[in-house]
Image (tube, rainbow, N blue to C red):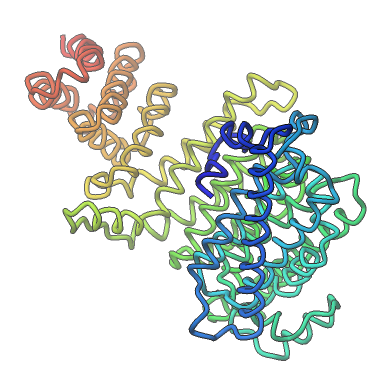
Length: 546
């Protein structure tokens, strides 16, 4: 596979030039090379089919190799991206480009890949690496364009995957047999109970990724069958979520019940799978679908702020949605997102500012990385605020969808107030969290210093302490953001006396900042990679002291 294809991460998949040159028609060596590659592909298909059939018949057989399955799926993912129905610019070319460039030659390959994925979804749901490659294979096919998506839609296996999703969208892992049978009767199909139970055992994260593949694969608006399947997949998610919200609001279900928690987690992750389908055709349909549910998704934080699994899933959902779709939202959709995000962060902060204890224990790099994963919820909250802040910039490019700057800054400023109490020096020891936090704070202080100067004293003191901590940080980007933030605060005080109320509470703020800047940065060897921002910070502080 390494010889036939490149990884093509972030690039348009294409057949390597060396392979193209070796397979040129008109010479015996070129014909032989093309035939050898075609025979090799058929041989690998035969191996993959034999393995999959054995897995389907004997899923618990110990002699079957998940590593072999993962490797074969990895091969087909890379190979399909470059060779099956290549880009339209390559259709006119001969040799290996023409070998799988027609619907007749590509359709069996695509159907075969969908069948492999279906078998592994239902029979090896707990083999994480196999599921990773299976969903990646389906997604790479769905992203190739309308021709491939049309061929996916006529694949019986792809249709069965869609039906499995619709059946299992309301089935948590511990759902009893009666719920499974009831859900199967609602959606019909000719699936066996064993297949549904196998798909039901898929981790919720993998089910969400399968849904991403389905949404992208069924996104051609000109295909009535695609539209019907897409509507069915989305309604299965929304109907279950509405039922959950009504049960919680009417107190027919207790939020602390383990089954209710499982259902909430499943719904959130499935909505996350829909959000991740931003590469679908006409992606504006995702905000149109998601917007009515944002207040209700945000409302789940009132019940589950203390549950880090659900809490982090909610923050990640809102972060991904803002990152992928903010530029295409209209005014009403933006206001819904901003309002829901503010509510989400408020309930999150109320719980974690009081009860969260930050520990920094391990000095080893591996241990530090593992510990940093424990604070992914805080990282997601910071990233959400950063993405929301980009709306002000994107509106300059698209005035027809404009939202007032004040509405944007109010939400970001409010969110920053919720995050500040969490950002202790212990938490700032983690590199990724530290970089994201100072990226947010640096932007806010430099752009809206007057708002930050007007913070309540305790919050302002916390902000100032974090800037003083960051100015001597080993990461030059963190230190520059901190120094620029300090300079902006000093300049704002020079112009408007914005810090007067804080100086009345603690009169040595300016003097303390000046002394620490000189002692911890100016007269230290670290000065050389932050010389200019240090000087630009020292100047206004000197003017204020003067």
